[in-house]
Amino acid sequence: MAYEWQTIEQASLTLGISTRTLHRRITKGDLETRLENGRREVLVCLPEETDQPAIPPGPSADEEAELVGQAASASPDPGLNLDRHLALADDRIRRADLALSAFQHSLTIVENEARRVRTAAHAAWAFVGVLIAGALIVTVWATHNVTRARANTEQLVGQVKTLSDTVQTREQQVEHLRQETETARLTAARAEGELKARIELSATVEAAHAEAQRLTGAAHAKAVTAAAPAPATRPSLVERLLAGRAH
Image (cartoon, rainbow, N blue to C red; front, side, top):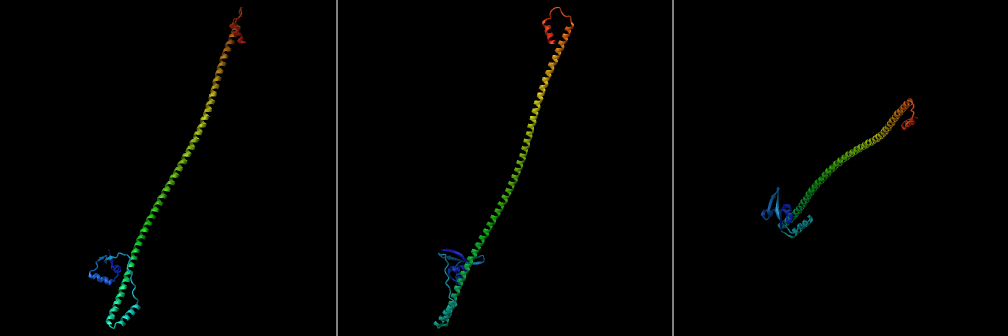
């Protein structure tokens, strides 16, 4: 058997008695009570079955009047009729108390359920708020990362474009240097040819000058020979060669 602290209404519903009877039993000391949060509670022994006992429906007003009439007609003693009438009224009050206790118990259960639902709703809204805040933070973080990645991409594209322009400029400079080198090579070859021609011309001039000097000497020798008296003897081989070259 389990024991539980319940309110007056819940205890009367659990025990199946009216609140008056419950108060009488409390007054006698049959039940243990306490004061919790300004509300009187009773220590009740719970039955093994959790289902609440069904509240029998009370008699209607017509049935009570009929019962009272039958009791009055059956018993000639008016005091006895009054006792029966009071018993019926007390029974009606007890049933009304039980119905009120059942209603209050149901209302308490509904209030507890509403409180649990309200608490669950608050928790759900708090969880939804946390999810929304997390989604907002993730969105802001993703937007920041995308913006930063886009800026880095644009910067890299600018650097690549600058490097491409630099490479193109270097290629143009290399091509210009290649053309200048080719022009210098052709100029050097032309200068070498001219120098070689000048050297050959100088050698030809020197050879011509030497030949002129030789011819001048030969002519001078011939003149000297012609001016001298003719020898009586035959000219020698050298004289004949000089004379033949002069001719």
